[in-house]
Image 1 (cartoon, rainbow, N blue to C red):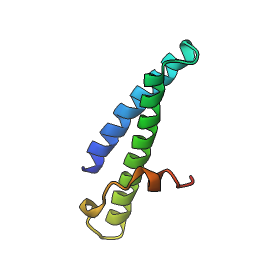
Image 2: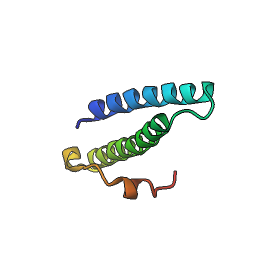
Image 3: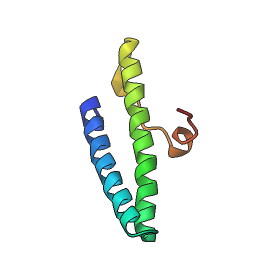
Image 4: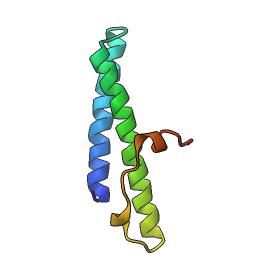
Length: 81
């Protein structure tokens, strides 16, 4: 995936996340399917941001950004901002 494709995917997922949060906030607790999807989106967004950071770092240091890969959610979720 190229940087623009990753950014496009991040934008799509962030919009879906906002819609779900709005829906859950309006209706109170919300359904379990919506909560599950929201959790899934958060994990996928973390992975996309991580991949984008890897690609940018490789480019900055003269490496091939296409060598970056999506890391497991368990690894990405352990990062601190």
